[in-house]
Length: 454
Image (cartoon, rainbow, N blue to C red):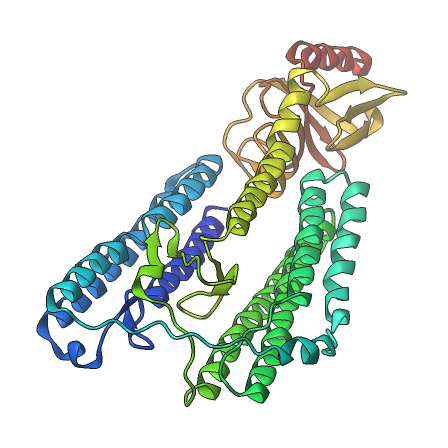
């Protein structure tokens, strides 16, 4: 498990490091989001700042890699907490070097009195609206991820995998929201030539929709693969093959966005395009921030051209962030808040004995074990060292397949805040269950012992 977490951290570190370097990259007469005249690039002061920033970025990348290593020596739960803290730290501190050396570059520019590029404005190509209305969106490409997510919803309900159910519902909402935004993507005026504008807008819409379909299909495959892998004899190979396919789809989606950006730059290489003054861009905690009240657009291309960013001078940016915060609160409430509420009201996990069967029921899982299948039963308040293999662990409750040093491979159906467990050894494997009332767990254990006594 810890090796998997390190692999995830490695991918995240590579993405963050590349994103930061890409945002600061020298392109289109700018470096660190500061417009630089051609003659200034040969000055020693400019080269010094550029070299210092490169070294700072390299040191930061090495620090990110080294800070991943402690995960190898931590317990799986603590490793997950470390992962979240680590990810937040690299996001919040990633742009420190860029902010520092951008301030130095702006000060140098003011000292040397380098001229700024004038902000150029293009008239809106009104004919685009009529022509783009006739563009037929390929909605069928989103049918596959929608069907897979819908199947995941039904399968997760059948097997009571409520965390996967929540993820699948969220993915459907994200998929449909993204489709709506892409189908209503605003037209952009890139040059004074109408045909070039029309071609680029059609290419942008097609490429963005293609990339979105690949990325959402990858997520849908990943969730569906996890869902059907429960209790499947080929679960490892299903997940392994699914992960390979997911990685290929994600890579293709990213390549599609890169391809559009490269094609656009080639097509506009002989045309003037609009660009922003230095004052419109700043570097915030999470990266470049665009603030231009005179720009009518809410979404604009980021400096690296790989994704969209918000114009923070528009009221819509505030409501966009409010919406993201609301979604996060709802998700966290569903994953942690609701189970905790059930636990505090003794409605999370319930043990009963019915018709010579041990039954554990919960809004998130259920299991029935026949007495005739039981070979041994034990009670404990300490499970020892273990890790999750395939299942759900929200700290409030754990369910699915786990491995413990003391019991080997087993299935858990437990309320995690209550350290009282019944360990059932049966013909089909080892099961660990409990009630959200520790006293009742002990009572059920003693009753089963009496019933099974010769």
